[in-house]
Length: 205
Image (cartoon, rainbow, N blue to C red; front, side):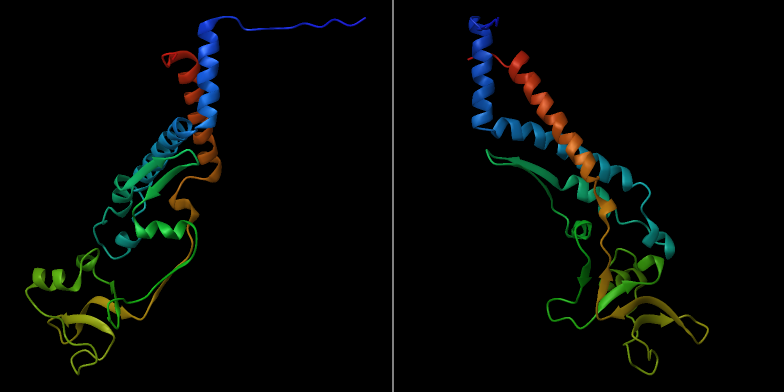
């Protein structure tokens, strides 16, 4: 003996919400917006948090942090389409999260300038010269035979401000952004928020 049970939904309000749900799964823009909002907030909050303590480069030479990570958080945005949610970080240094980076001179320059003194950290050569009111010795000259930008230290030696190098290699650093699992959790949170909105809060059509 078998029993068949047929369940039908006759309530017009429930049907309307289900139709909205199915429509949202056909055009997923709203769903992706919800996912994008949560992943955007995750990214911004994470960058803002690590910006408070990731100052090793500046601290090593007594420099003032440039706020690179805080600016990256501010320059992070989100867009959504029927195909996907996209979080974009408009900060070139974040590329290290995905791969090793090699930086070389651009615009016809021969050298990269790496700060050695605290005053040079986060500043250009011109900015430091303006602050000091002096121009650096020319590299390779008798006064400065090394590949550095320097001034006399008043004791017959050199005070070094910048090292001149042909390139800089930076190893991949996945910790610059949240983990893959954190992004998955944020995306699921966005899905749940969207479902809650469509089923319980969005005005039925």
